[in-house]
Length: 237
Image 1 (cartoon, rainbow, N blue to C red):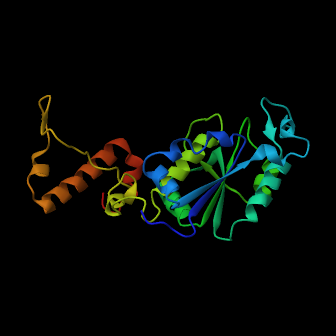
Image 2: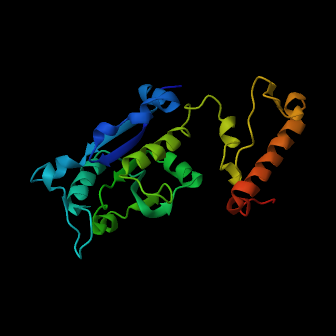
Image 3: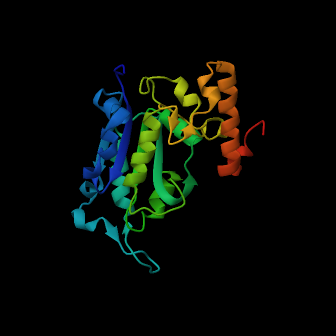
């Protein structure tokens, strides 16, 4: 990996900064972090309460369970972050009510200079601060997490993989799952025969054109079975 002068930066607003870097400190993404290909800026929301860390949330108006992080806390934290970033950034609030995350969005976020992620907790954050800052609301899936931190780690990991010089081969990105709306073909390695199950002969043929066609057909086949919703987006069905 080559060192970059101004690294891509993830700014994470959270009540639990000690959770980071967590998984982001390991493997390819962790190596890129150590080599300053990207950087991590953690903003502790508890530092933005004038009355102290115990006064960051309140009960929701209209009743209901749980607590809501107050708008002034998020607002003050964002004002602090914005002073350090340029115009080329994305501001995201991670919430199960947001638009579902996909590879197309990941590519868009990875091309920005800075990514600002707001991690909700409890029952979320005050809607008014979401509207005030025109946050892009993003969901990592149709399920509920205890907070936005794990979702933030997932999103950042996906973005960092796409940064220049992070992966050894850029060609590997082209055949990955969700590229061209197809799931990736099956992968095999040694031994050729494992418990009576053999590697497809075409992969051992040395015929690169046939192998390429096999991979394409397998991707189409698997996508039709597992994700018929994706196959509708493919130009050639």
